[in-house]
Amino acid sequence: MTEQRQDRPATAIPSEQHLIDSRRIVPAPGEDFHVFAYGSLMWRPDFIYADVWPATLFGYHRSFCIRSTLYRGSEECPGLVLGLDRGGMCRGRLYRIAAADAAAAAAYLHDREMVSGCYQPKWLPVLRADGIRQQGLAYVADPHHWQYAGKLSDDEIVAMIGKACGSAGRNIDYLRNTVEHLDDIGLKESRLHRILRKINEACSAA
Image 1: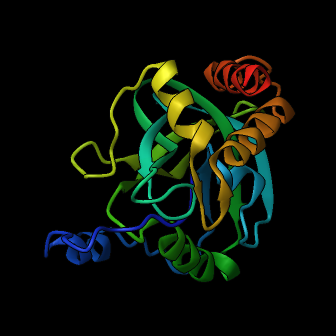
Image 2: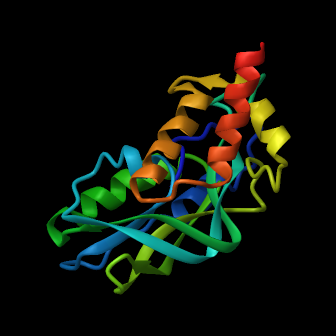
Image 3: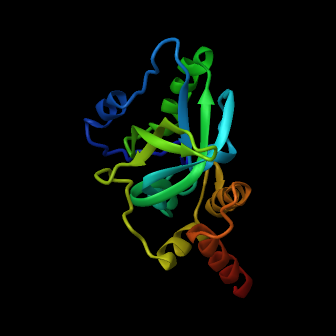
């Protein structure tokens, strides 16, 4: 799932807070729940979980389609963080959160992911690496939100990530951490690997 907190402009529409509140997920009392991670949640979950598996989500793909103007960028120099965009498939991690920790984890995830309305939390079928299908919570990019950057070319992504920095650090470090954890789940070659190589080549040539 991606970069945690996203800034909102001072001119945010009045319904933004209502949108955020309406997207709060409350787990069923006494039940475990599952969360699909595809970005920073893979390498910094920061909630208590009972199990984790490599897993695949179908119908969405990992994409640098969310503008970051706080944690990985600024208003003057926006960065990019990951969202789930329509089409294709996405390999990531599926966490199982025990019932005793479910309410606290859900509240934490809402505070982390829903500082703005750039994500739509959805329950989606996820295929675990052991062959079991599980309903998992996934934070999907909202294509109607102002932070949605759309389908960008490699060169556009490289240009933004290569120079952006926010309060959580450099945008390129976010990319490097994600690529490292894609390697951990056996995804050794992806668009993110290609983008990281291009940024490294540009830095070497500078």
